[in-house]
Amino acid sequence: FSGVAHIPVVVHVVWNTAAQNISQAQIDSQIEVLNRDFRATNTDVGIVPAPFTGLVADARIEFALATTDPNGNPTTGVTRTQTTRTGFTTDDAIKSSATGGIDPWPADKYLNIWVGQLGGGLLGYAQFPGGPAETDGVVILHSGFGTNGTAAAPFDLGRTTTHEIGHYLNLFHIWGDDGTGCSGSDEVADTPNQGGPNFGVPTFPKLSCSNGPNGDLFVNYMDYTDDRGMVMFTNDQVARMAACLDTVRTDLNQ
Ligand code: ARG
Ligand code: ZN
Ligand code: CA
Image (cartoon, rainbow, N blue to C red):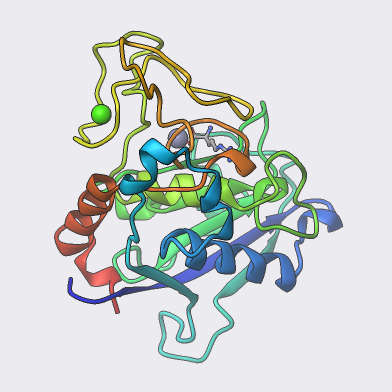
């Protein structure tokens, strides 16, 4: 695409307790985070260590709650579904009304985001491009979604959704998903080779896989640090996401 891509979003709130029926303000706060993070206008980008600042990239992707539903009618871009299920896992049950969740809107035209209670410390998960339409999209724990309401530290800056949409647009974890080894790759040229995930908020430099002197790019959205520690995509990650939006997910850009 040229210029800026525009992606319509539908947020499916699937709630069991009243608290899980998150507010419109919490949803809006998440959309605002996405529009900062994917345009590199997030003010906390200032924490990027000086040797890495040249890698910071504007993904040129903007998000908005859908204004037209699949039938062509006006919509808020939010669905709300009460469920008897007290929690969901990565089994995609939240993505179907037959299993206590709600079906996606057509996945070629909308980014479906399901928000609900997840078990086992799971913050969220995503489906990579090219998978089945009926499960396409991202799933986010309500307390890791947005920046207000039920959002809880250290995952209360909306970065779980930024990270999962990275996967949805074909980005792998920055350490290459090979445990703590040095043979896995994220298939991105400008990210340093990295052993395993980083947690918390590391101090520069954090070395692994002989990647000195600058070490791991632990401020990247595709690492596992706390929300306040992940603040950037790289140029080559942006190119990978753009390639996805120009091919497999081309109809999403509206
Ligand atoms: N564990 C999840 C995944 O691998 C999300 C991690 C998000 N991290 C964060 N600090 N919000 O997709
Ligand atoms: Zn991930
Ligand atoms: Ca790499």
